[in-house]
Amino acid sequence: MPTITLQQFMFGAIALVILGSAILVATLRNIFHCLLFLALSFLGVAGVYLLLSADFLAAVQVLVYIGAITVLMMFALMMTHRVMTTDISQSLTQWWLAPLPIALGIFAVLFRVYVRHGGQALVDTKHHAVPTTGIIGQALLTRYMLPFELASILLLVAMVGAIILAKEDKSDDPA
Image (cartoon, rainbow, N blue to C red; front, side):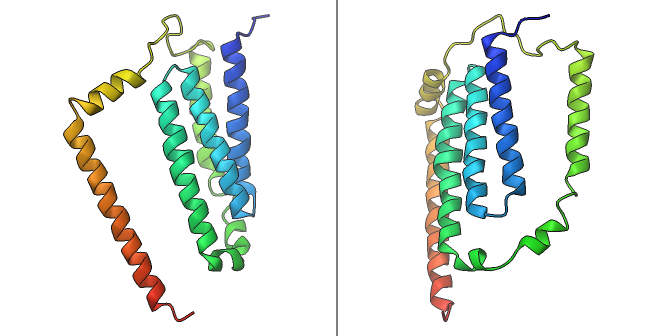
């Protein structure tokens, strides 16, 4: 019987958390609870990045996806009262089986690759990677500083435009 390493055990545990929270995101009826489980799923993906020694991607996953996108979705959900009062359960119940063939197809392909390689890891686990955060930070603040700043200005303009459009939409609403 093969022994399981700590890294394999941690990957299995994190994979179960990701899978369980993803299933709850797709099946729960309360949208706010779905967002909480989505944040848990994103946190699990950050854990997988840490297991792969991709510390920068793990930090970006937590900061961007959990800290920004999920919180933004929660604010948008709380600010729109119409979404909370309308009954969307009828429109969701007729389509819940539609993604099942796609998921089964992806599972079949991944299982075939796993069986073809004899259950061996497709990643070289013998060589430990060096932390990448410092290297990427140095590149962003030296070689890629201009594109990085242009992207931040573009995102700032998009955010200000969204705020202006949201203000105009609120002023047109008679309620």
